[in-house]
Length: 171
Image (cartoon, rainbow, N blue to C red):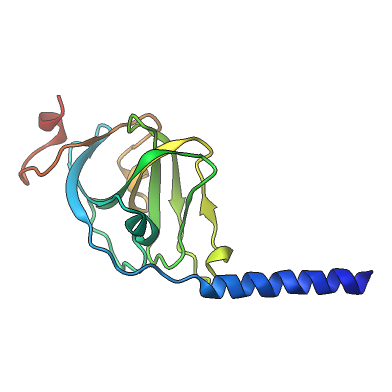
């Protein structure tokens, strides 16, 4: 009986390892950009828009840096189950993530750390536990530094002048 359990466990591990080795980093993508206002923050943020499945899969993988007021906004056509989340496989920089409901209000945030594993299935998934339709990624610490909280809203404002403030844009 012990031998049978050992053989089954070994087969499962070998299968999982083979499956992980078949997972490939998505190819580099091009992203449109826009500006958003976030919560009470007066500085508009420049975000890359991840709208397509290939863009969702690639995200910020293999980026070495992100501007101070720059990020990525993931937009999904439908509300997603709160059990699905983001991982940090092949992501080199720590990130904050805010999950947003269909009204673009923050329902959950995390600070996510890079996963150094070569096996993507060894990387933690950061699932919000609440339905979401958007996700905003910024440099780690951004939300705490700028007092971004649950319930804060993202407003897409399009391209603006460098001198524009969210207070003047969103009224």
